[in-house]
Amino acid sequence: MSLNIVVMAAGKGTRMKSALPKVLHPLAGKPLAQHVLDAVAPLPALRTIVITGHGAEWVEQRVHGTDLHFARQQPQLGTGHAVQQALPLLDDEAGTTLILNGDTPLVRRETAEALAAACGGTRLALLTVLLADPSGYGRILRDASGGVLGIREHKDASAAEREIREGYTGMMAAPTAALRRWLSRLNNDNAQGEYYLTDIVAMAVAEGTSVVATQAASEAEVLGVNDPLQLADLERRFQRQQADTLMRAGVRLLDPARFDLRGVLSHGADVQIDVGCVFEGEVQLGDGVQIGAHCVIKNAAIAAGAVIHPFTHIEGDASPVEVGEGALVGPFARLRPGAQLGREVHIGNFVEVKNSRLAAGAKANHLAYLGDATVGERVNYGAGSITANYDGAHKHRTEIGADVHVGSNCVLIAPIRVGAGATVGGGSTISKDVPAGQLAVARGKQVHIEGWRRPVKNPKGEKKT
Ligand code: UD1
Ligand code: MG
Image 1: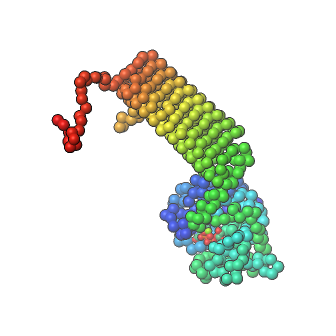
Image 2: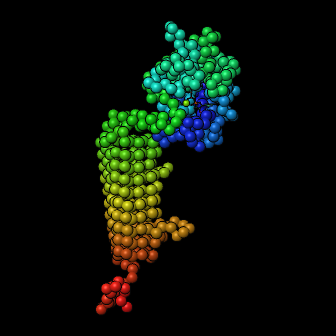
Image 3: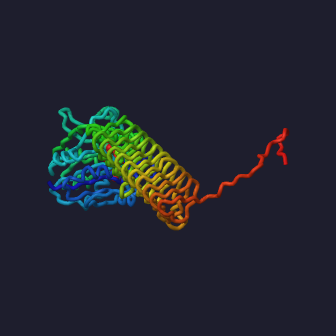
């Protein structure tokens, strides 16, 4: 089949009351229009044309796909006017043009494919839906025997027409040559003064072109986003679909209603995820991984048996944060880009790790910072200790050998090396390399002053001198 695809994404989305063009508002972290483009990407289209207008540069920058073409619509005079802008780019007059709204994000590939097939280059195929509350939608007008007569926009509909519950989804497939002809005859003589794409249905009927209207299998798939309430509703429906897919694959979600995935989650067996977690980008969870409540995890690979305690924030970038087998992280830990934790590493509360590799069994259990560091096996890194990795201009590395013990409240001024088996006394500020196996202490010596007396208050509350 020779197919063109047109996605309309030029409207402002006035009802969103936002500076961001509506089709760029994210659903599960991805722009609405991108959901539509991803759904139709597997179809064998000659061309996919996105109509942009409001915030066109912004939209053209943010949406992507293979062999995408953009057609600008300035000003935005309605959906029919939008498709008119795509006409010069349509290929093969004998084929089918599939038209979708950029604000209907949950459409499935199968549905788009079936609609194009129903057109088959000869019929006008419409996707409709029976809605409990169809207000705002164009209504499908049918004759006594059920034949489609046209679409009436909500604002133009009579009270009786508004009772019709069958709405137009914003998705249709038309014979390309006929579409060109119908669009050239549109006018804007209606309640909104716009060129309605939906007016072509009555033209097709008048010409005797057969019009087929198929009803969508599910309502969610064809719901459009026009305001923040509808966006939030679709976000929850989409999240629930993802949660159900994961649970069917064996993931234990303690509450699927309090689960958010904005990307891709791959997992092994016996993974458990507590409430209120957000996953972003690409996250891999190995067998038996447990994620505590209220964690935010972006671009990370967490190996088998690791436990991430509540309120932990993990943020990888193009290369994922790595958490080794059996590691324990959190509560209240922060792993930033470049954090690589080996097997059975322990990272405790209020510990931040950035661009640092910790070898197997290393521990930083409380209130610490490790930045640009290489930490050997079994190192114990004390509470309140930090690597001073930044001199105001450059970042420097800290190397800590295996079995080192860093006491509490130490500052390791990078670049610096602490040799294997060394001990750093609590409260030290270390500015010179520490030889392996030795004790380094660098702090003011403790002094004792005999006979010293604390100041006391006199009865009037004044200090005695
Ligand atoms: C449209 C349909 C309505 C249908 C509903 C389904 C028309 C006239 N009405 O109404 O029958 O029930 O979708 O959700 O088609 N757009 C442009 N240029 C414009 C105007 C809009 O590109 O000049 C784009 C928007 O960015 C959006 C899509 O077209 O992606 C739909 O526009 P919107 O204003 O939301 O139309 P609805 O009022 O929802
Ligand atoms: Mg809409």
